[in-house]
Length: 486
Ligand SMILES: *Cc1c(COP(=O)(O)O)cnc(C)c1O
Image (cartoon, rainbow, N blue to C red; front, side, top):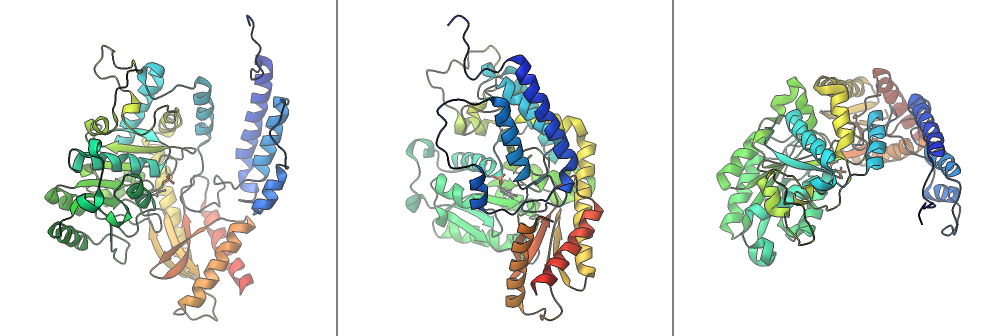
């Protein structure tokens, strides 16, 4: 095997040929995305049929054909969250530079678990973390790492919180929560990650204290404090309080400052789930909304949401980086990673749950430099303005009711003249049917929220392609589709 030819190799000429065409196709796709349907609305069966029923190929196929085929399948049968009329969930349009960055990252393929395996990539991730801290307005002394998304970022912080605040033997002895009775506190609006975390890290879902929210979907902090007091009196051991900076349904931001005060008083870990909303702190006029974030022991945020990174990129930040290594570091004999002269060598496997790690930071790092703080400030404040415009349009339209507006999320519902505004049952049914129709017809894509018992249509604008015209057209599409359903 002196001149080894492996089936996987692609010679330089062919690589360029396929690569150039792929880049041409992607450039065309980005340029025409607004002319395509947001989704084809095909059923899982129809989609599966396109792949044909075949077993694992015995032998290889020409790679250029494979790319032709894969490109056609994906560009003709996908939902495009980069479409200017995609407003569902919290899934942003991907920055084109991020797509290129992912290709470069995959080509170099650094394993960002250890510095020695990824010298430049580790340094870039470290700088990215520092910039993200600056972005959201916390000191750059926070430490952290990139993970796959908001769930993983919250899990990463949760286990740190458990390690630091629970009885000190927890790492060795594990948890026995019917005896230890460790509890965590979060607003009722908290994303489902908290239940997975309670299961995953052994506290059990009964340890979660779901705190009521007010009419604006903010945690009622007086009830929070009373619950903590009651639990202490009843032999429970409160550990963690979670505040939300932008809840998934309506974008509400908790009163973080007063949660921080409660945490200090009771010596609890203060975690902020800012997966969606915390990047809005880059907008000068919005900063006061996030007052108290500087006191968070840990923060989760999602560059693959409002920072427009292609999936996947989440980020966990921890105020005292030593708490990360106290939780995650171990030194097996087969790792020869720490005999570097520099004491500050950062091996990211010691900071989180992953061992081998991909180079997620590159796309985030490139975008942060491509548009800078001012670019993000502009894009994020434009998204907020568009969301407010939608709220106003819904408010002004006779057949729409505006329900809520926070950050870049507006909720509203369709109300035909013949249904009484108070008849929530009929309106909930109609709006659910309306949402289903909208999610399949490809003109615009919304998701839903239930706000004070009202089934609402929900538009979250984390989309740098959306224009005022798209918002006006969205209102028309909703009303036209609603009228058809009556
Ligand atoms: C999106 C979101 C999550 C989950 O993040 P993923 O990236 O989907 O894992 C958690 N919390 C909040 C507040 C979110 O907006």
